[in-house]
Length: 245
Image 1 (cartoon, rainbow, N blue to C red):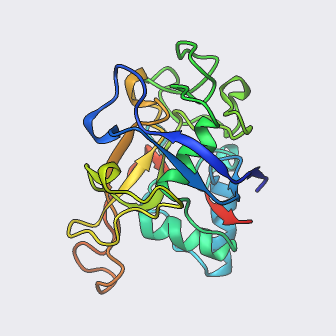
Image 2 (cartoon, rainbow, N blue to C red):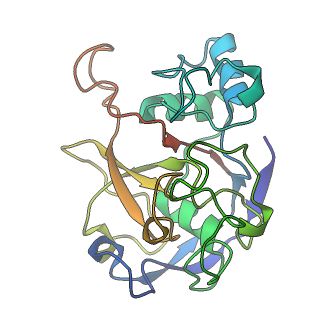
């Protein structure tokens, strides 16, 4: 998996446009150390390597949004893996010698140093920039939208599949967040995690770079197979990994 170097620096985090949701406020400046971010979303083929090596368990379903044969079909080997839980995404990144990105790292990789609304800037989203709003009706091959690249050259950060981050979700977290290398809330009674980027089925408002979503993550402290252990999974959620400098 190619990675993109994200240099240390300060960036604008949160909602800066009129469509921002309450949990995107207060917008604020955050300073991060340098890190690496996967340029692409993790694909079926990449995930299969981890499963074959014993580092990962198979996705919770082998289909996609509209394809009955997806995960094991060579035709879709370069498409994003879906139906993975937060715990499965975490396990893959650790097997690969990486980790899930923090919410702040994800947003900096997508936004760069300005206050842009979308990874590519302010141009209205359409079929040239991203797979969203059911324009394609299912996942696209990763890297299919070079015009939608972020300022750092990270691809597919809007649409295609939404992406797990490492952070617990808290709606008012920005009001109390650390301003240097924030790691998200330390605990969560609900185990909900932040998901970023919007998906193939999301409207324009939900593929903005600052959009935050809350999805039930895995509770790895429970017995495997017990209720709540897996958390949620979806044909519209995948992930990418990050790595320290």
